[in-house]
Image (cartoon, rainbow, N blue to C red; front, side, top):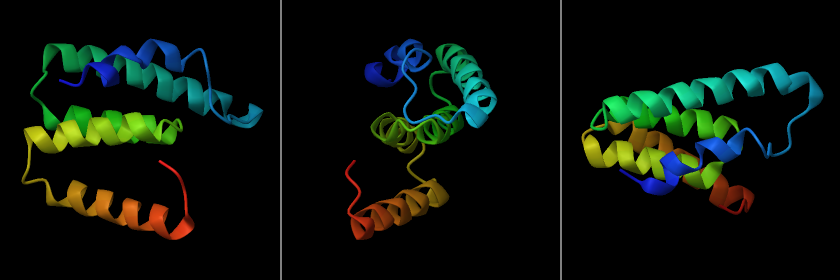
Length: 102
């Protein structure tokens, strides 16, 4: 398991990247879901779907690098997950075209 992904959950509630006031409740809900996912991952550390969901929440919260690490962990546990591989390839292609930094 990637220690960086699991150890940074506590800091997410403290420093919110670019969150609008109207989005606070959605942000709070995502943080709570992330904490719950982290607890589930401790119980089921080999479940690739949990890491995939964690990556999605981290991405939604603006933590792109941590999201990529969670998705990579998911693919390590389930290399046959074609839909996640395609999603990550499309995301990388969009980021390259737009010039977005990781």
